[in-house]
Image: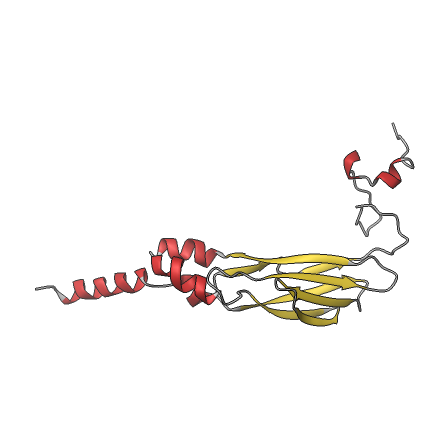
Length: 173
């Protein structure tokens, strides 16, 4: 006859092996803050199917779904930030498996969580980047990658200097 503590232990082990950590600990949506410098820029967000899911102005926060609802269906988005007189910024947002899905199911033996429950629920994903802050440059500004706002300079590789600016470079040694 099996003792009651052994039955309890077996029930706990069975429950853990059938668990889906990301489904239990995760959320189907994620809040993504969006800001720009300068502020009051237009935002348009489209999903992987090309459907516009949000239109607004910075700064704001947008709640985005992490799953398409299909098996292994992580969402992806294209965030386009525009403002008259400034170059448009396009930022991709993609879903990737989160720590609860990867480690949680491994540690707690959730094979069913790994291959069935979490991929169907979509809670296994985290959207990245988790916040967007666009530094917009004017359309007439020189096209460079020095984004410092404190007056400092950046050292860059020659291959990163736009071809149109290379003839304006001056040797300093």
